[in-house]
Length: 149
Ligand code: IDP
Ligand code: MG
Image (cartoon, rainbow, N blue to C red; front, side):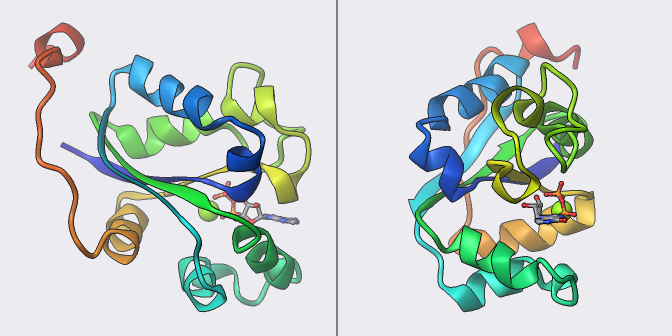
């Protein structure tokens, strides 16, 4: 099944939103396969956001990501990359629909509390970067109550 990389950014951790965010993915029917609370180095944040290195907001983005611990997670499920992005909502919280994490819980683009991989290929790269040790191997006993097959 498909996997995606989700990160609760330092503002989400500081604001006590870890449980709320995990709950939305968990209740949907996706499976948590890896999770850790960690502080990242500048060089690591720069690697994660390498595609944005030329953007004017890049230094501020790196400052933001290293400003406190983040929660790095791997979630698994059918179409979890695209559906995860829908659960998260648009990059700018002012464009994010009510009912989405950013639409409900964030105001500013530079404090939008959560990251989610934007494609299956990005997810593969991000999971390899953040979880070089691998992820947990388990299956939910509720699987047939969420998935048709
Ligand atoms: P995404 O997180 O929705 O995939 P990206 O375009 O990949 O959005 O940007 C990565 C992160 O960079 C955003 O989540 C946000 O924290 C930050 N960011 C994006 N655009 C801006 C901006 O115009 N000003 C400040 N920060 C930005
Ligand atoms: Mg992105």
